[in-house]
Image (cartoon, rainbow, N blue to C red; front, side):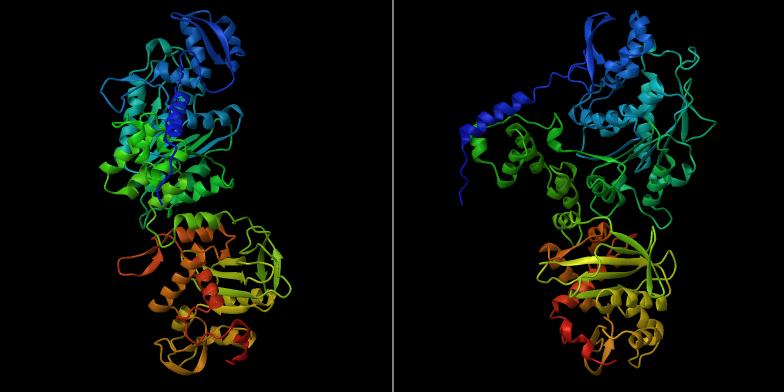
Length: 624
C-alpha cells in the first residue's frame, strides 16, 4: 500500500524541530548548564555576569574571592562545566588544533546523572549504553580528574579498558591534561607550592600520581587483570566492557564484580561502566537490563545516535522530494523525533556501511536495537526483552532438607507461586555436576495453562550443585508439593554413569522409580527403533535437542509462557547455533535453566518429533 504523507506538515514540523534544537549553551556564562544556578557579578575580565552554582555562594571563600584568579579557581570547585572549558583542552574529531572542552548534548546527558548523585550525597553509580563518536569516555575521565584535582585529595582511581591501546590513549589524556593545564588555575596542591605533575608512583608502570594531591591513577586493560587486583580505589571507569575478552584463565565478569565491590559505598565514590553494544551474551548486557528494571545500583543512560549534534547532513534535494522518499525505517526515525537532516545523515551512513547490523549496533536508535543488532543468537532480542518484563524477585527462597522446605536467605529453591489446587504442573530436571566449577543442576516447575491463565508459567526453580541421588530426591519433594506433578528428567548423564547398556537407567533412576509414580517415560530406544518397555527420562541427542530448542524458540517468540527468572532470560540471550548446526551456550556461560524450560514445554505441547509421548493425564498409567 502506498504511503500517504502530508508533506507540508512534515516540512513545517522539521523547521520546528530544528529551531528547538538550537543550542544557547555557554558554560563560561553558565547558560543552559546543569543544576541550581544564580546570576552574579564576576571579577573576571570580559565576563561581567555569570550564572554559577548556588552552592558556590555558600562557600566562606566566596566572600573573600575578590581577585579574578581566586574567583575562577573557586568556581572550578563547584562548576564542572566551567572547569572543562577553562582547564581542559582536547583534540577534536576533525582538525588537529587543541580546543577547550565544551560538553556536547550526550556528555551533558551523562553529566546530569553523575552530578545528581554527587550533589545528593549518594555513591555515584552509572551504566552508559552509547552510540559511537561523542566522547563518553572523555567526559567520564575528565569528571574523575576534576574530583581528584579540585575536590578531594588522596582519592585514587582505576581506569580499565578492553585492550592495551585504549589504555595507552587514556594515559595520554591524563598526561596532556596535566601538561596543558593553565598555570594560573592551579593552586599548588594541598601545600600551595607543589608543581602540577603526573608522575610514576613508586616505579609502577601502571600507576601514576597527581603530585600535590596524593591522588593515584591506575590505568590498565582487561587483558592484564593481575596488574590491578588488590588496588585501593575510590573511583572506577570501566570502558567498553561488552568487549572485554573471556579466556579460560580470566573472566571479565569476575573482574568487574571484583572492581565494583572494592569501591566503597560512600559519597563521591564512583563506578562508571560504559560501552557500545556487543550482543546479549555478556555482563554488560545483564547489568544494563538490571539497571533498566531498577534492580542494579547503577543508573542507566542511553545515548542514541541522533542525540549527537554532529550527526546531521544538509539535504541535497528539495525537502518535499526527500520526504516522499522516506522508507518505513526512516519514517520510524522521524517518529522518534529526528529531523530530516539527521535522517539524511543516517541514510548516507547506511550507504557507506555494507554491514547494516554493525550500523544498528554502533549507531543505535534504541537500546533494544543496539543489543538486537549484535546478537547472533538463537532467540530474538525483542522476544527476550518481552519475557524480561514479567521477571520478578521470588516470593520465597527455601532450602530443601529431607522432605521439608525451610525459608532461608539465599536458598537454592526460588518460589514465585505456591501450588494452586487443581492445577497441572511439570517438573523438569537438567542434571549438572557435583562441584562448584561444573554445570548447574536445575529443577524448574512449570504450571500448565488452564481456565484461569492462558499461558504456561515458570513458578519455581531449584539451582545448585549436589550429588545426583540427592538431586532426584529434591526433585521428588518439589514434584509432590506441586500436586504430584509430572516429573521429567534429562537422563543422559545418569544413563552414562550407570555404564549399563541393557536398558537400565541406573541406580539413581531406579531409586526414583521406586519412590515416585508420575514420571515421564519415553517409548522408543535412543536410535529410534521400537522397544518393548518404557524408559524413564528424556534422552537428548542431536535430533531431540533440535526439537526441544525449536519448540522453545516458538514459545518465546509467541509469548506462550511466563518467565519469572531474569537469569533464564540471560541464558536465552547467550544461546548460539554454530556453523555445524549444534546448539549450545556461548563459551563461559550456561544453558541449564534454558534446557529445563525446553523440556517442560516439550512435554506439555506433545511435540510430534517425540513420537509416542502419552498425554499428560495418561503418563502415570505405565509401570516401570
